[in-house]
View 1: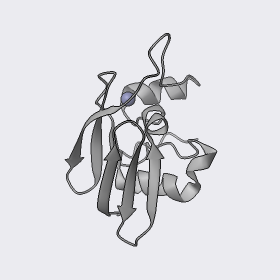
View 2: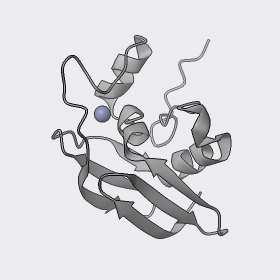
View 3: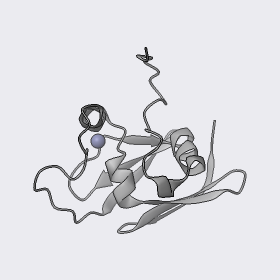
View 4: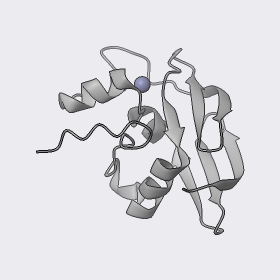
Length: 119
Ligand SMILES: [Zn+2]
């Protein structure tokens, strides 16, 4: 299980994590918001739609609050009021390793709940 030794949040730009092995990765807030792992946002993405922004929703975005979730992840509260997604260190690390520049190549889903619906 990935763990993090340092968390640096620039509310309007990025969340930078340093993992226990020294690897560090900056996640842009728009990428994080679009990759929100909550059930609602996953539902949009499953339908091939963007989970953010929706409709004429403002694209002004910032992180208004953040809270550690046990030892395994972080919950982010967004300026649009959304707060239900929990980002696990494991998923963020996979995303980091996969290359942030290629966009959301790793959906942040398969973490806590392991409902296997492949096939
Ligand atoms: Zn969400």
